[in-house]
Length: 129
Image 1: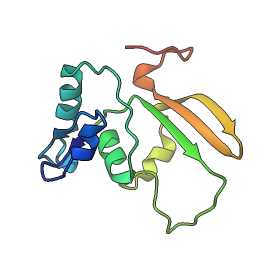
Image 2: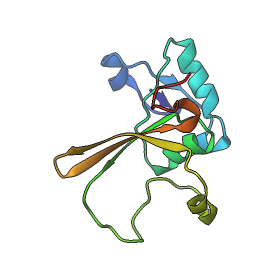
Image 3: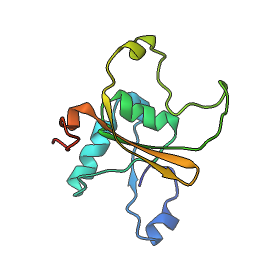
Image 4: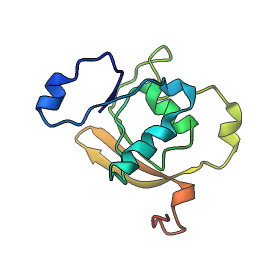
């Protein structure tokens, strides 16, 4: 668990969670050092479950190779919080998507959508490293 140095992590540590104090804000384009730290600890895959701000920071810094998006059949309207906080770019609609759908699953009424970045997917959906 990465957290600011001023947070009390005692309860997490008592449950065996490794807590690492981090002093840099994720908006400062510094998520790569976080991933390097995790690699040094022996992690080669990281699952990030986050809100729009942190998810957007990972995307903006090109640090995402897979997305798993869950969607409920709810229509929230244009004032609802978006999935990501990225600048509007109408040109995206005319460009080829850098994401390839790997799988879509119905989970009750919800949808699980699994995507891979095309930099990591071969012509037949295989993972390239």
